[in-house]
Image 1: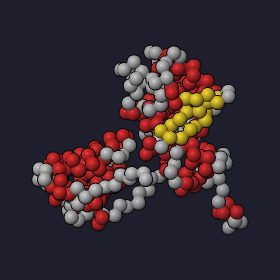
Image 2: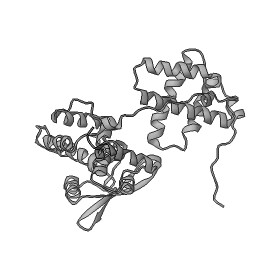
Image 3: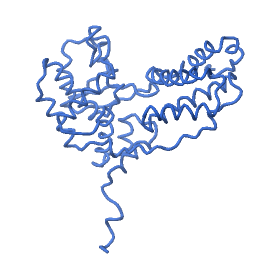
Length: 310
């Protein structure tokens, strides 16, 4: 019989520790089975929350509903966007739920907090096909100190848009993830929850990537950091400036980020009639409803257009 890992009631063990140490151990247990990218973000959210509690001489064990409301107000006063505040609060609710399940806390104050549905305004984060083309073409013509860096930046733009990758998936790519398929090839992408999927690339992009590889080893990262001789990836925070510069070249005034290219991939495919399940498969959406949302961003038709003029 396959063993199953379950959350055990470890309240007694945690309660034997000093409050601050118990809190630290609780967070470690909460994060242990989550993907590395999620752990990094959640650890930051938890650190922000515990620092906030420390400011009023409290720890997680003492948390009340009022503390959660005040933490939400604290995030708002830091001028964080509503979706970001929701993300923080969802993570803290998860942490408190875990603490309750382990028996570390006797009541779960997070259960009383209902997160508001936030209008993500997805339609405002979609570029036109012309915008995308300008970003790529003007980057190809831009003046760079090193030609290799220019080629890298162009390929980053193309992969984020054409393959619909998340930035974490992009920087995690290694050459061993590339598999030839007749005249083109596919990449194996590790997405959320460490789930892998295969994305077949158009022939032109496959060839550009192979030319860019040169003599790089199979375990080397496709987009390496300057340190580590190809064995350390480009950091996520170093990709955003590449996108920002490309957007400025194209004359875009919005704060375009990596995810805008992924949104645009889905929307443009939906507008061109690509089957929704295929878009879902390519982008690695767990829920078909997530993919279906892109169809309604800029509908090509509506019943309003079929009524007589009044």
